[in-house]
Image 1: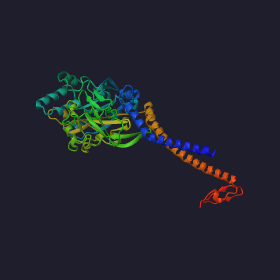
Image 2: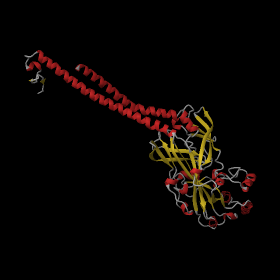
Image 3: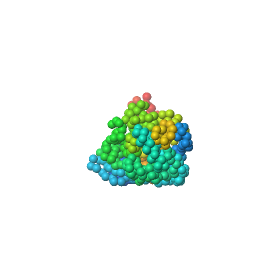
Image 4: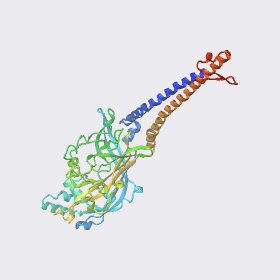
Length: 508
């Protein structure tokens, strides 16, 4: 029996060693298996049913929240006083995104157009689209700045045209009209006699050209040959670089289309993307780690240099002519109208911009933009892109509608495009990216622990079995040779006979 125990113990020691080896191997192989699955599921391929569907018809509910800067003192502004504004909103719209005209190419790229539609959500809004607000009239005050270098007689004629069509320096309209367009005799006149001057040929509204439209023809890499390139833009509307700006660097189309990024990000990674609405590429930087319902994430935010002017940040010189830091001059891609993009409430901008307007209060929590990314897959878990639309306005002689307006960059609206993964998609993410890796990690260390425990216990059993075998053999020798001397039994040891005739040996 003792001999059998020793053999069984040796068998368990071998099994323990193999278990430890398997657990150790799993610590190396496990992450490779997970990474390989991520690569397979991240490539843009119709065979990847879940990830391809996520990319094609973004199932995450996206919302656009719009805030208007309601002008409280329009008459005083015309007399040169400081503008006073009151924020109204949010007016929330559900954004439906869908890719169409999807075409795969032999060079591992895919082309598509992405269509967007907006649906008003009264239950999520602070008011209704019938609410009335007052904002600067871009058609008048924007055109005045555009025409300030024309001959004085021409400016007088433009002013007369404004009066003919009863267009004043400020608009008081409903939210729905300002968003999606309103009838204007001046717009009809300009479209008839100066075609191409305005962005749309129908009604004039701040978001009229956004609804039921697409963002242009994107061609991006599928990642089939190199996963590091997945989602990166190859061209936009057939262009590999833009022609809006003054330097090649500013005209570069960098990064992705702004919805997903390549996997395996680190804290040193950045989030570059091209935005057709901003007419440029932008880049977010790592801020901090976090979690969304147990899923690890990295938060990326806009650096302070994003909208800095060329004086404060030399690489942005190509986006000039610039004004104060914190403003992006988009006139070159907006029909030369004096329009500027900034963070809401001039967050991260030159403080002097806040001094020009009363009623602004910038904070990072409310007005900073961010994207929370799952670093292993490059999939955004929570997104909040916040931008503000501003109009540069001033007094222009000959155009009486401008009165005595002081030179000011006037905030008109700001909007937030937001969305986060929830529901079945979040559950799938949680299962595949949190639970399964945790189970695999538990198995790795479980096998190693089990193997070590098996080796230790089996070694103890083996040692005990060996000692027991020696004891039995020596006892048998004493019984067979009762007259044997101590020296005959064990050389160098003492023999002590007990009442039970058991023998123990103590080494000298």
